[in-house]
Amino acid sequence: SQKIEQNSEALNIQEGKTATLTCNYTNYSPAYLQWYRQDPGRGPVFLLLIRENEKEKRKERLKVTFDTTLKQSLFHITASQPADSATYLCALVDPSGGSYIPTFGRGTSLIVHP
Amino acid sequence: SAVISQKPSRDICQRGTSLTIQCQVDSQVTMMFWYRQQPGQSLTLIATANQGSEATYESGFVIDKFPISRPNLTFSTLTVSNMSPEDSSIYLCSVVQGGGEPQHFGDGTRLSIL
Image (tube, rainbow over all chains, first blue to last red; front, side, top):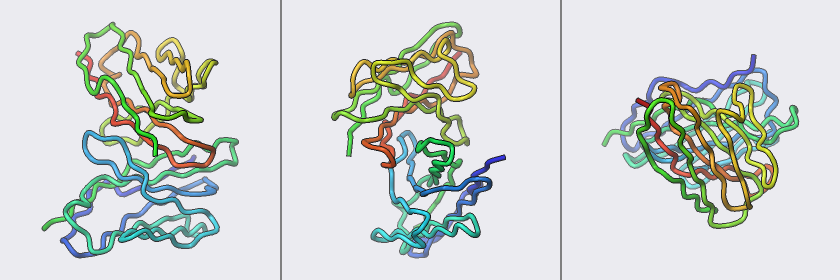
């Protein structure tokens, strides 16, 4: 069966460190992968998109990698700040079934301690 | 990016009643979607709201329970009918400007059924 797995346990890190979040998938052939941030009581906000032929994408302090062999994406936040504390969701778009609607993982909660 | 307003932001309802959630976008969009998010769970797609025609429902969701309207390119409603405590959840509207584009979400409607 198809699965998208993100760490269900919260990631606690110290301010200034790099946070690394993982998204693993099974039985998908994603054309691209998206990362979203969700704050309590708010809807998800799009952060980055990476395509299957891209190894890495950067935006300011954010970096996403995509390894289609390992079936994994890593999401990095460098020089993390308490304001980065939120839940981060990965979402896959696999058009092999005829749809470009993303399928979301459960998300990983990140807590950055001052 | 599109600005999405969802109403109501929260509600507490009695078992057996129905509630209609509204989603208004500040610009015309190609696609509108309705999601459900239960605590600790991933976003689950309920349906794609199609302008001028019946919504396209995902497996496990039916029109009688979740009737959807989309009278134009900027507005949609989702009704949760004959509610039971199992319908307690956050309901989110999202939009996409074009095929393959990231989704933009409203802040959701937090629904509790007593």
